[in-house]
Image (cartoon, rainbow, N blue to C red; front, side):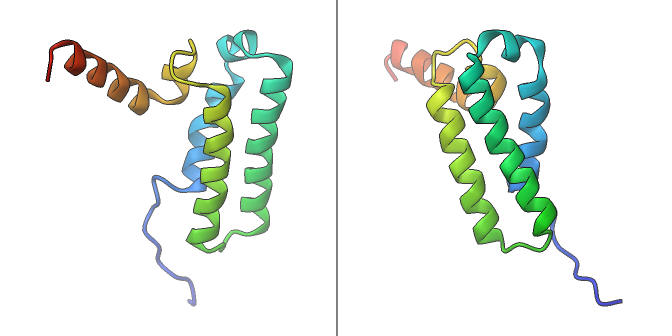
Length: 107
């Protein structure tokens, strides 16, 4: 009776973790990342999952801050040009490809 309706946040921390967890569990990722990088990324997602379970009604500002911190860590490990970059960041990979093609075409 006292519940609140909230819009589904497709860019929030929960969606971020939900998108990256299966990628991080894939054989390809586990074979191409070093054990230390894999542990760091897995730890970041575990921390986010634990936070979400403990704080189901956390403020969007806080979950966005945590998502951005996890994203920065992943970005520091999976840089553009890394073979796994398209798997982790398909949108960024497409943008980089488009920018490279536009630059080559002189646009």
